[in-house]
Length: 221
Ligand SMILES: Cc1ncc(COP(=O)(O)O)c(C=O)c1O
Image 1 (cartoon, rainbow, N blue to C red):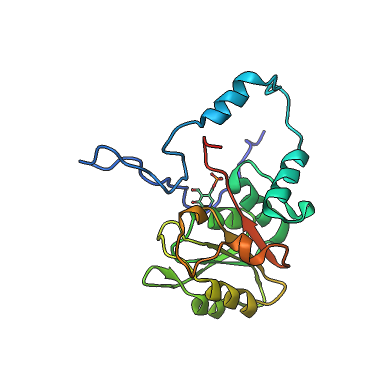
Image 2: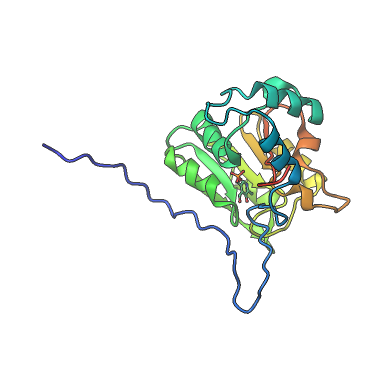
């Protein structure tokens, strides 16, 4: 009898950001978007008052939630997908769009899950150099080939904290062919107050060939 063999992947494991720093007592960790304020009182109230069936599976199509999201953000409900965190949606994107040997472009310093899920489905991950820790549209475009299927960027970027301006984002989408999906991860858009910044959702809402990722603040409302 032969033993079961698990597939091996040549993938670095995900390393979460540090939550503690020596000699600093109170560290507010932003890289995971966890609320520094604890669970919202509104959430607590809803959980305690309503007769919620947490022991049942939720609606797999998240219909009510998607309706509310589409109203709030004024976008077509049919274009919204909900996942168990952005991570699950990144995984779905890789499964839906990629086949082995396809190419995925990610910036040199970028959120690790893009490359992890792309590699799991057998795609090749191509790194685009950054300039002074900032994503470079020119460097991304240089890396595009016939095999390119997805370009992932987080704006602002994690872990560098730098961002692409509205014009740079528009330029990036324009320079990519229509068969390349541009994924703009808006995970940290709430932190941005700069005038020349615009969130991926505000810029590309209801447009073709762009996928926007948004997440809720953990433990908040
Ligand atoms: C840029 C970026 N995108 C997505 C995620 C994953 O988000 P979620 O916790 O919703 O899966 C993170 C988590 O740190 C992130 O930094």
